[in-house]
Image 1 (cartoon, one colour):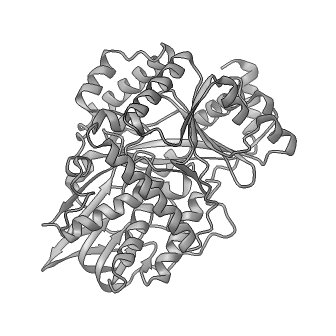
Image 2 (image 1 turned 90 degrees about the horizontal axis):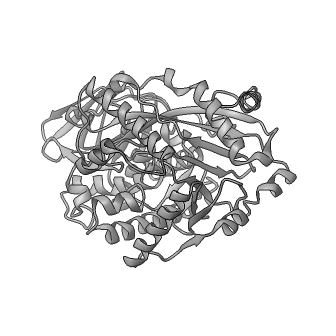
Length: 472
């Protein structure tokens, strides 16, 4: 980073509050009391992020008489669900390319299920009056290097070949800059319907209210400590009590699963984001962005960015930090060296916004698995179901995961449970220090590929063949 660019980037961060922008909201609901004593229910949902909230809500929609309890270790939405970028994608496979590489025969069905899932989220937002700034404005994958432009064209041709290009539009340099103006943009692929923008914390809080209105009993500051079989059902111990349930759905994601054999399938990856102060009318005019799409660049170390309801710009991504041993720690939630790097990248993308300042800077852990998209399963003779490994695309896909868990707990054969994606698991991560070394080499190789026209070296090609990956 040049000294002048570094100085300007540092100045832009001088007032940034080290808290997630979305969670610093005067409308944030108060925490509900912790569970004390013994509760009994038909279904216990462990985890108060999107995964658990959608599962509880869908369970009541399927059977309003079902007795449902949800426990959350801290407060609903405090972790990944309340601090992400607010991109709600239809994709269940972490994008078309990953889906094509892993489930080519199922991809049309997976795309259809993803579209129906996003439609279901949009319907739920309307049905339950979820005040979460939901805007189905789509997303543009932008190319900032010539090789990325070639890759976007190749991807679009493949999507067309499969008959899945409805709603997609290739944009040349002038067309993409007419949407959002950056001198770094060479072209883009606009998915007009497959992604919505929303306020992630407000979605979590709205889902909490909807669950309560349907009769779900929600206990906050109530971590599940252990899981045991109790007769025909299950028991989960909590700090001040326990829950006895016929069935249990685990939506703990990045946190250690209560089913210990599942833990090797995920690692925490820390992702970081900045939020600007609101743009003035002149600043808004200088970037355009009238159609309010989400954007992401096409590098391995990619940035994602979007505009908020009050005309701020969220700018995140690039660094993906894996802590040795896979420990989730609040100390990792902030990384000033990454904030500085992100700020410098921001002004390289939008030089016309020089002088704009950042109001918030934060990070958080993502549950990453080796195939970049969720996996599913059961334990304890089908009395427990889990979904995890959403790898940064969980805002929308967690609802699908909730449906899968409920299908599995009911022992039903559905179009979801018949999917190879649902029936098979990713490769687990190796133990330390092999995981640390392997992830470090992979990150280095991905950065080298970005610097060398996208050319993947032998290490990355080997990882591709093995089905192993590392992403945020």
